[in-house]
Image 1: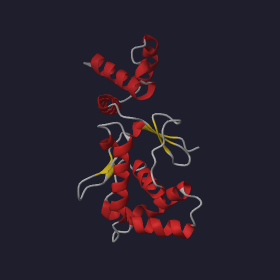
Image 2 (image 1 turned 45 degrees about the vertical axis):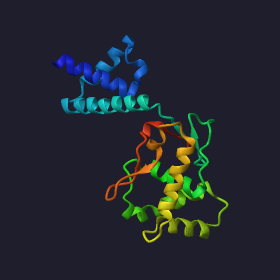
Image 3 (image 1 turned 90 degrees about the vertical axis):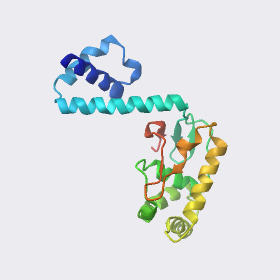
Image 4 (image 1 turned 30 degrees about the vertical axis):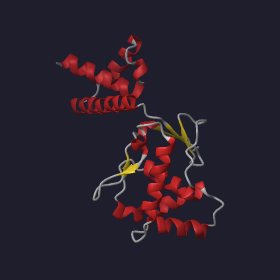
Length: 197
């Protein structure tokens, strides 16, 4: 049993830190064995659990053939690579998309006003030539609990994704959620590459 757990932990380590391309290379076996020897049982089990989640994510990504997103320092969203097609979001819609990508845990609509400052900072990067007062007013309206602007912009975002994404994959990129639960983008954060430097 100990050897089996040790092998599981070694595979887990490789999946999480070395990458799947090294998984079956014999040369890395001794290096990771030494690192794993000092770990407590609870840590090894946690490592295995993380790897199981990673394998599930890989399986889902492969089965859906999802497209990776590349976000540059101007918050332009590109498909497949940094030079790939940019998604033609309107500035405020793009800011909303970026906000949700930055919060994979999701945002409760009734608490969306708590994210107003963060959204305004994102919008300032996307639209630096818009007057600060105008940016502030637009973001306040979008995040206001009394306004319908959030629903309008989220609908525009989702419709844009339906037009631009490969058939059958847009759902993973949309802002979705049921009443009383956080709205979120279900795309794995592993498929989002941020190049903000």
